[in-house]
Length: 124
Image (cartoon, rainbow, N blue to C red; front, side, top):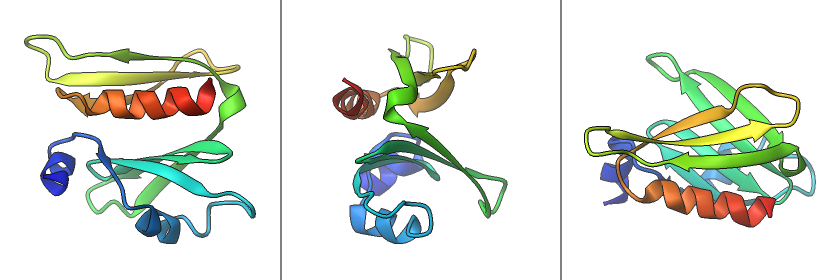
C-alpha cells in the first residue's frame, strides 16, 4: 500500500536508512535523521536539528531543491483539509522573516495529519 500511496500523492513514511544514504552530503556532523515522509518524488525530512524539504523538479527529477529550515525559525503552521469537491489538502509553514508560507500539497486522505503531528512534536 505504501508505494501506491506515494504514487498518488499521499504522504508515506520513508525508510530512514534510504534517506540517510540520499542525504549523506547534506546532513551536518552530529545531525541525525529521525523521520521522513515521501510525497510523490518529494521528501519532508525531520532531523534532530532542522526540517529539510526536498523538491525534485523537472521531468527527470535531476534538479533538486533542498530547503533547510531550523525548527526555531518556524513561527507557525496550519493544515487545510480537502473539501467535498477539492482533491488536495495543504500544509502551510511560516518562517520568521518571510511573508509567504511554504506550501506542501497532499492528496485527499489523512496522511497530512501524520506529517502535521510530527511537525508539532519537533516545533512545540
